[in-house]
Length: 374
Image (cartoon, rainbow, N blue to C red; front, side, top):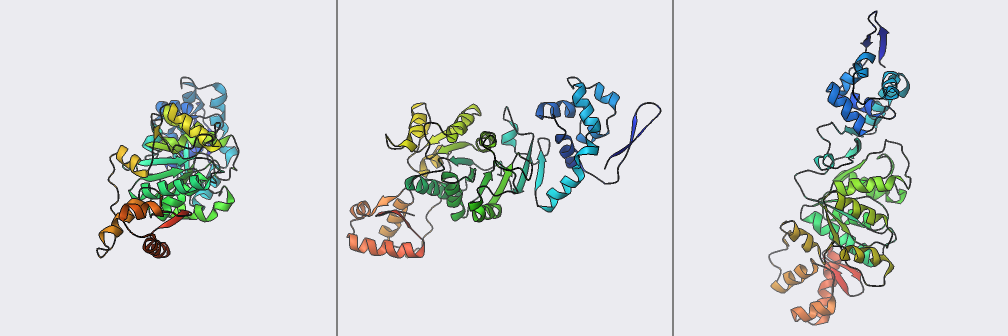
């Protein structure tokens, strides 16, 4: 660890047993108690780098405008108590990257927020700034309809190249991730705990799949358990990483509405799937629409909103025109078999036989009795 020797002039001379880079110094500085983003910005503005703060003398710190005496003393004495080197090595062993607000990899979308996290802990990758991202959130105790809509929108958006962002919670969040993974697209989970903790634990398989197809991130240190107070903080990151946020199902008082408020404050778009009047899980969604949110009836509405071309159905050229027509209809939203028969002119027996075959091949899925979706 850092060692010091007092000089006759009152300055300090540093001797370091380990070679370190700027990321390590940022990690050390951010760990000092009481160092929030504003204080970090003052110090970086004054010294130019975290390493320079690490090496600064008492006299130099006293010249930093707006730095309290208590904060100055914590900086001067912190290294011998925090074990930063050991924590840093532990992160590397777990495959966790530490990104300070001042790291080049820190997402540009978050930097533009009025209250960005001062740092992120990341496993896997980060959303690409050059691609569209949509957050999909909603009720944990979702209905079967909500589950299928989250999965469908996650699938179709990711299939079109949109990055799907959510919180890996039970219900809507988990199904949105699942849909994106099934399409072979990218999805990212923002956790209300440390990135080395799978919360909820029943999503372990989903957690591992997200790591392979995207990434997991949090502003909370590794090893931090989930607490109720952490989730509103987490929600602003979900919306901050997204161009827009889709609310699938939400009660009148819901964490999803907190995310919607954060999205509006950040200048993000808010999309809502309308719900049936009187349903408890539709109250929050319908009120958002009343307040000006954008109602969407299919994934195509969001893709069209951002001018993103839809993934064309790349089926076998030997398919007949009516088969391609059915697949195109099922790519929009779940459709009942009777409507498919009416619009294609097929008898229901032949149509059911075809759908049963496609279901076995994995081309379509029956989301509820008689309703199919691609």
